Image (tube, rainbow, N blue to C red; front, side, top):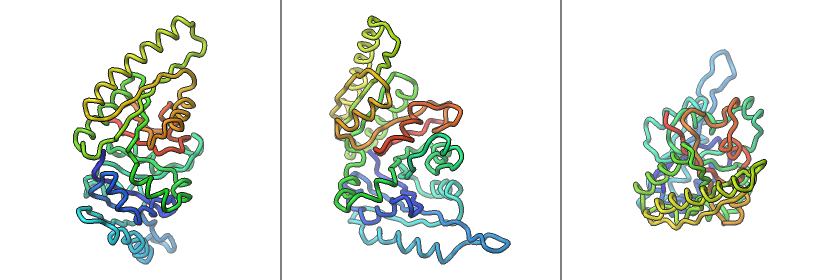
Length: 292
């Protein structure tokens, strides 16, 4: 689905472990991988300065990826000084990539507002898709488990769909990347629509369920023309809970989502299904940034 990626790590999120799994990432379809880390300025003294010693230490750690790269795979190391949300955009100006891998801890909405998140900030700064992976998982995977995870990052996508503008944008973006890189397309997609039936009459509920089924069949036909196996399901209940249950039942590898153009990811004043999923999901989330 993607052929080039920028892996952003602060060395506390577990993503630096991926230097040992470049061959597995290559099996997922990647041909170009940039490992990036941002080292804070040395704050002691009157004027902040570059911590050259720390920069070299981080480079040495990440350069292990260079020796693990199989033939035909381009691996580069970038280490900069400063805040990630200042340095990452500069790296993106130098390196054209399809996707950004980043980590974010599970936090409440209030914690996100006060403590911030690099993933949240990136969603506002770039249109490139993000693959967000929980640091809690990366740091506890065994070598064997992480090897398989790297190979299968985008193999089986769970795609929530409700015919909204953001849902349509999501489908269009998935189609765009699959058409661009058919050799690394997802093997399978699970299209799911959840009907919130609370307080609705039975006749209206049945109508909405039938309408959702028809919408999913239309999207299924679109994706199947690209050679992707697609299954569909319509459920009733709480959308977030049903999506998470489906992810467990169908053995998916990532959940794909997008937000509308007018909303920023995790906007404090405009909570949404996508926002809640980003905060609560233990599964990797592929977030397609809205056009600005």
